[in-house]
Image 1 (spheres, one colour):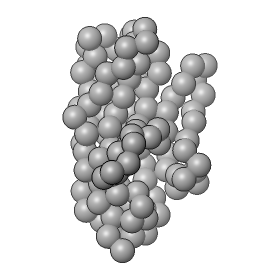
Image 2 (tube, one colour; image 1 turned 180 degrees about the vertical axis):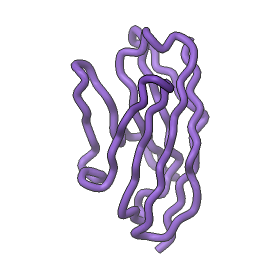
Image 3 (cartoon, one colour; image 1 turned 60 degrees about the horizontal axis):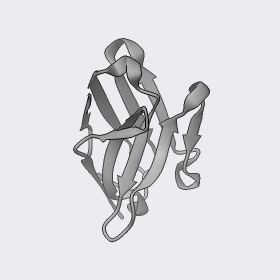
Image 4 (tube, one colour; image 1 turned 45 degrees about the vertical axis):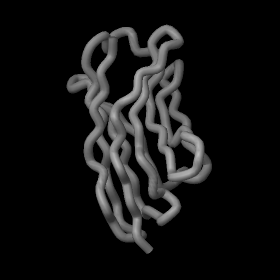
Length: 115
């Protein structure tokens, strides 16, 4: 079992920044991949950024150059630094971790970007 708790969402204006945090607990050593997804109203959930096998990092094209994913292994925390936010970044952001093909999700944190 893996538990994920997100924090750091909020309401900002276009061009501003936010940093999201995801604290993981439980079977941390069993996590294969981990990352951030988001879901905007009326849209499907999409991958934003993630650590994949081999320690590589992937980003959605829409956030490349603006968002940065990082992790603090000592504190079992993954971060998403979001700069130059746009109204189209408005969504609920979810942290996710995969363990042996099972995906665990956090409760989500709302990010709202006003124009």
